[in-house]
Length: 242
Length: 233
Image 1: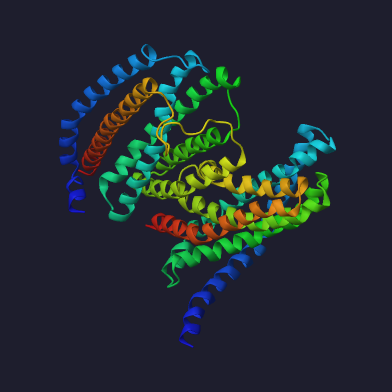
Image 2 (image 1 turned 60 degrees about the horizontal axis):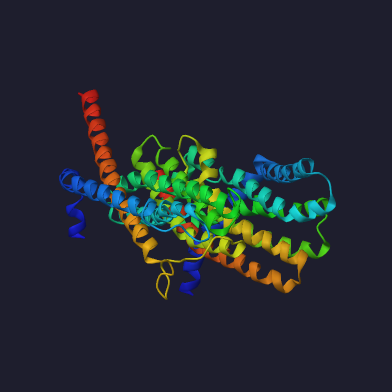
């Protein structure tokens, strides 16, 4: 726990974030450029989907991000509620809109891919429906964070909601799985190794790494701006009092 | 003997709180009647929208009844803690030695008795209006009996989280409706199975509804109690 509380000091966090940020920006740019080049120009078209398979290189990494950011939100909320870690609330508050953004990208790209692939923009399929519900869980979290005049109360309420939502996500997932399904099964993370060809797997992994480092960059910027906003608020309050 | 007294130490205050909430609900008069009227009225609107063909109504009946029941619970659950929060009695209740989790359970039980139970009573009427086959009535009531307490328990979390927030009602639906999806899916699955197949096929979703009820009975009071505590801080 002592390690965790080293980062509780906002000033120390800002120092570390300033040191990390340029590197994560550079890595994001390099990964994104190489991943996009391989994905758009240097990978084969699919025998079934044709050129539209290239949507996958954005769609699949965003879907992964939408789920891993929700897990991040859950862990940050647990840390915030159990150890009352001051930065964990800020991290959760900063991460939720990014997660909602990735979830929206997943839905939109999936819809664009569904039109040539399945002949329709939307189907009430298990995966689509559970991602849609995940999107609404993110929106509820964001709305609850901003619904209270006292930001601290909003943060605590949102943390409880994030934990409740995390318990519910597998239940929702399995209930809609049971309900209806059309989306293809997993093809990268499987017990017998990936069933997807290496020429497609490399750009896919590059893109998902790029999205992860992009998340780190944006998260660091957002937490810093949250800290600055708190400082400005404290200054204004002390001026008003003085 | 000592076991007996400690048990009384938890249950007597819970029963007292349950009785208080029931009396308050009866004294204010018609709160639960309004919920039932909303339930029936909202369900009656659908035939005007989709047309009166019997086959269509039978097909959508279970879904409409479940969705309107869910909305009726959502409408009423907003008031679960609000009145006590506004007049300050929630703070007095929090000062009693009764743990907040049990307090929440008593309030949820009172909520279910004043909204969920009347909905169950009104359901057969809607079943008749939607031309549901007689064989589907039993499973439908059983599914609602298992599903509506889950709706109350999960709704209580949202109700406690939105205490003192700026936009209560709309926010509550945004928080709670996504969490209601599993109950809706398995609740309608029970009726669809009872209409199309034998009673055996309806057994699986009924068991899952019961599992959802047990899980939310064990977990939801913790989350609700935590939310009430942070609202009172």
